[in-house]
Length: 382
Image (cartoon, rainbow, N blue to C red; front, side, top):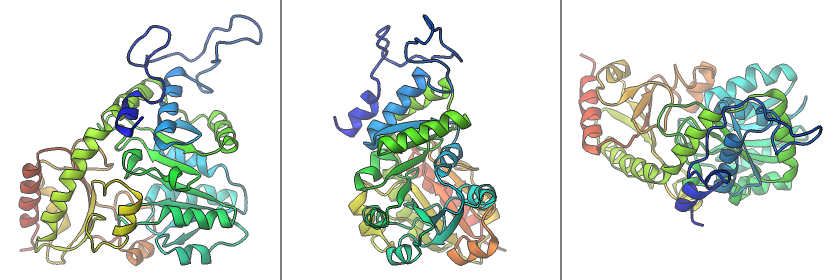
């Protein structure tokens, strides 16, 4: 079954008990057991719930993995995956990784002596150079948030296998519709499903997919033990959102290409980060390993333009946290998504105060361009 059909019919296609086309919301905490030691496949909804299980099977099918797991947020999924590691282990992370990922490593897992190395994962020589006996995983975002660095997943996974360590890929920006890291050799894929998979800015969720039975057993134990599960209603909403992923992503991608081209010619803009441009570092790798460039664009305003004025003068595009909804969203990474990263590191990698991240929605492209044009023009310092 091809991906566009799998989005709709993957996982459990309908309810086997009633014939309902959609999986019902099994809004229950516990399940009746017919007799001692016997159940109908479910005991307690933290351990397993039919609605959540349907979602978990769906994301596993889409990523072509062994098993999927649904969590209460993207950070809950990341936390569960990082809980696979133990004291003295180290993880290589991309140098402009999402601020929440950095924060949980730097301020939570650091307390348990689980460390990290910040590396430009797009430079595979640097990745391999930083692997020592304590490094147990390479954690990749590709494209990275917010600078759109591209890492060759297949080659990174080869390095990881050579050193007998894990490859973990945050696939939030691309989704399985555009990129399937497990097919490229990754061991674990993570999604903030709050974003494109949900697609409507009406739920918070996280997903993880693993490629082996061993990892599935370990991650299920962590999920059940720590309890950061996704509830039945949000699982239902997420399944519903995923059904329209292909049509939404096609429109996101189409709009982003046009808007990136518009921004490229603007005098207010000093630099644009968009993997769809041929001159973008990693463009050829992105073209090889994904079926599109996504709808995330970051750009830097020139010094004579005020980013606060830019945000203030937007009328259609929403200034706020998050990304991947049907509506276009802009944020200020330095003070919002990446505020947890120390100033020196932000400056070094390019997350400056005049950097703006744009999540292109599915509105009319001319309306979006007009809104950006008016706001850019109004941002000039007097």
